Length: 456
Ligand SMILES: Nc1ncnc2c1ncn2[C@@H]1O[C@H](COP(=O)(O)OP(=O)(O)OP(=O)(O)O)[C@@H](O)[C@H]1O
Image (spheres, rainbow, N blue to C red):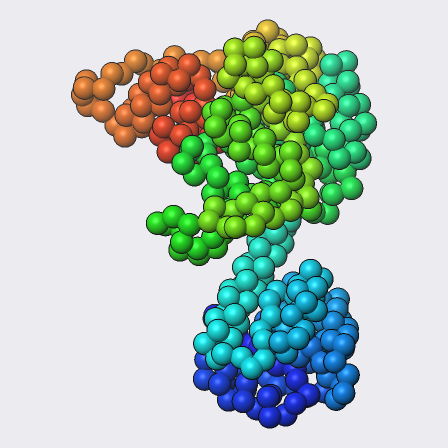
């Protein structure tokens, strides 16, 4: 059910209070009045108030405005997200402006104009709604993230190169330094980012992962920095961008090497100033984020070519963590393979499954171009397909010999058509999965699943 808007009006002048109530009762769902500010704390506890319309001066004869400021601070202490609109006499404008610096949302001058007052209250209520939604989204994200972390499982590796990675993570986690994580597709870059966040002082705050490779040029600003209602045709209401949602926590920008130069310029401004301006907004908003970025590209090469800004690179790579490809991790390959064998054997009720020594040999020899992601999917597929108690090499390495089918030859199943489209797109984009995902308008993870399914 939609929540009703509730406002609280606090003024010790009873005639002001009743005329405000009379007018606003017809326009707002619920209006509560109070002439004694000492009741504010209990009203805030008992009612679900969205906005407080607060008089600046309470005690007759004293016009310092300090009473209003005092109560405004108390309200914001009890609920930092509360929208407080001050109601004040002409002479108090400077005071009201100072109060706004302390957290009041707006002020209205006495004698007030009913329509202006209503407009102020309505935009205050819209702000309250946006603040509440943002808080809810953050809570949901936190919950999802906790659920995700508990299912994420272990980050495995005993090889010297992975030991060095774990050591770097330990060293940098507690700092707020920007980290650039480098490595081929599927080497575990997101896992590194999540691990840094988990070990950081922001662990109880949000971790927000953004796949920059799948955000189009036109949506880039509104996705990252948000927009106000009406900023463009489809902007039906205010929306917070990823930077604002991640504020207080960690923002992980994946595939940063795929950004165009104009997008890089916009990102640089946000990172440099630690503030963003939503599309259509007039004022910037400060954001407090720990920035982690990742790419599978050779970013220094991109800088040399002129397709990645050097100043942006310096902002994001205070520290670099380089993940080695799986093929260079020696016996880690088997360690990870056995880990996933057990995990999927349990999942699919085949707990007796073992790995034959031939299969282990082949797994060690193979180059795993899709790295850990490919190995993990290969184990899952093998566990599902295996009919005996022992996994043999055929279960891993025979699936890619699917017959070649071309569009136009018949008959053609939906799966065949899908496979041909994905294969062609991968070729067209020279293996850049983000571009494939964008072109076919499906998520990157789905593309990876299809690649596995069709053995591409
Ligand atoms: N060392 C590891 N131990 C166990 N599982 C791992 C390890 N590294 C990666 N994985 C698993 O492999 C999969 C891919 O990892 P992840 O998404 O972190 O890679 P990535 O480098 O960010 O990929 P991409 O470049 O495509 O964004 C995940 O399911 C992850 O849990």
